[in-house]
Amino acid sequence: MSSSFRPLQLKKSLGQHFLKDESVCLRIIAYLKEQPFSHLLEIGPGAGALTRFLITLEGVDFRAVEIDKEKEEYLKINFPSVRDRIIGMDFLKMEKPFDGQFSVVGNFPYNISTEILFKLMDWRTDIGQVIGMFQKEVAQRIAAPPGNKIYGVTSVLIQAFFEVEYLFEVSAQAFQPPPKVRSAVIRLTPRKDPEKMKSARSFSVLVKTAFNQRRKTLRNAVKSLFAKDILQDTAFNRRAEELSVTEFAELTWKMN
Image (cartoon, rainbow, N blue to C red; front, side, top):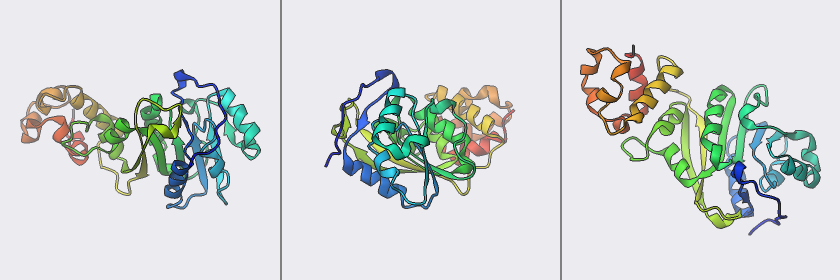
């Protein structure tokens, strides 16, 4: 069930592990097609395992961003139709690739996968959906509910703006070379009712401060952000991991 794979030089600094299992690619495509879209960005196409299917989608303006010049040339040679659709640069430094709404897909480089999501959050008003491959532990953290020991900053900041679906897990043998970790695919869809908060910045500061000392009660962890009388509220008796995303958002209105 694997697609043909031609060896390419792997760059550990870029966190490269090439997806080679065709059945995994087809599952990702199937989930992607559950929602209509006309513009699509692939992040980190690598050897083109997903790209070869994405370029065949009808009525879709497709683009791919690839930082590695060797992989960019490989894609242009092996997939001629993608030649003018590749953006050869660091995704974290690129401008928004389309005007209006677009979807995002990719086997994200694991060493920057969280940074990728936070950049996509800045574009959330124009994003239809994000379907990405992550290290399993990262995917679980993004999807974790309150009260879970892995529920943390990433969980709260992303869930405030996106619905998260944990789609399926992927064996290390689906990659060349096999990574030392398991992987998982998740889908993020912008929430129709994003949390109401004082500001995205105050929300981020509160969440990061709260989880920076997650073993302490909220009262001790975030005391620098609230007036003393506000801190007497019983909500501050709990620890950060016990608060829902909504409760964090509501607390921003009471911050200094």
